[in-house]
Length: 186
Image (tube, rainbow, N blue to C red; front, side):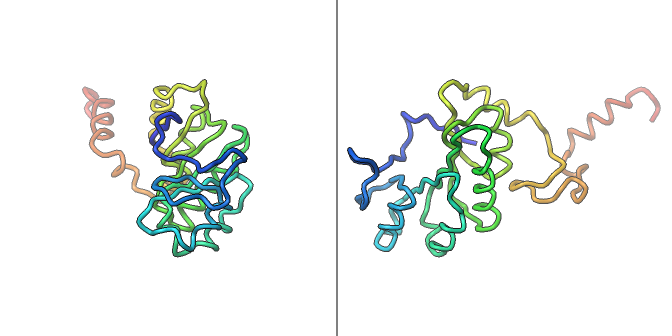
């Protein structure tokens, strides 16, 4: 997972003094609202990277049904967490990855806490912009807290009972098992 600092972000929203511009100019790495994207999608050049910001109450099917051939043109979909207890953006990310096979970047913004990072990764987020009081190094460590999960997810769709866990664990598990029984004649 990539952690984004707002000051170093290459994606920029097209806003004017009165909010989002209704018809933003074509610029690489423009981050548009859904309304802006709908206004310009017909004439947006395919070779210019564009991103779309979605509120967590927007139905992903609205984007997918409206843009089936254009999803590959989107380089970034930004999903917003207005509060850390509101998990609708997890579902949006999972739908983008699993149902619509979106291969671009999916970013979490808003009230994103370190504790959310493992689930963000499991549901399809590739980037996160942490809340200002959260530490990026701690978030990076949080990604390694769990070696595996019983349930399937975006990264590994099969649940543990349907996988060969011994093969997944590999040589490290064999060494650990051997060390456990070392000197016991087993």
